[in-house]
Image (cartoon, rainbow, N blue to C red):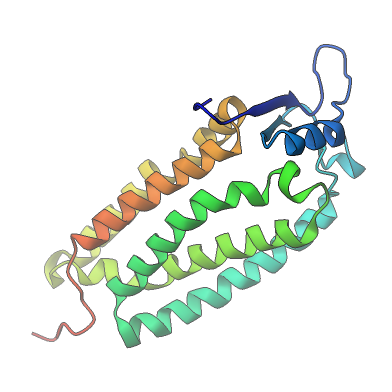
Length: 219
């Protein structure tokens, strides 16, 4: 750990003997010593908690309910971002979304840290999901117009189609695997840094593109 940063690291469920970690005690110890508590919960998922919700304590139905609410937020922000893209410009909306994603990447691990928010904290977990889906919807909305408009009419379909699918394969297909590996080895904060790097790459890419809002595509 960096100098001056204390870490308390534990598994939620010890795989060798099946014992549960005293997470409440560890959280208090970490709080008393101004340390961060990192919990590897991979062995507890599907085993501990109500209906296998893991040591955070959420049941599957409870998490699915929060996820459904967040997906509705995602859909709403797609519509909002499309309206704003027509009003203020596609590039500007995506730039704002990328900047917000960078800030969210640095802050969201604290919303999932039991030492900070405790266990079964519906408010903070729902806030985490809603903010994440809102920012994703804000970025997702204008892409349908912005990406094709970057290409001339004679290569518009092939250019946008190849670009979008390559990005989906290279940039998105491996994200769950990478994020799971990072979380398992380095904790959820490393996933936040990974998201921040990806958002920064998106920001740089968008800044290098031209605004297409006022382009006359009839010529």
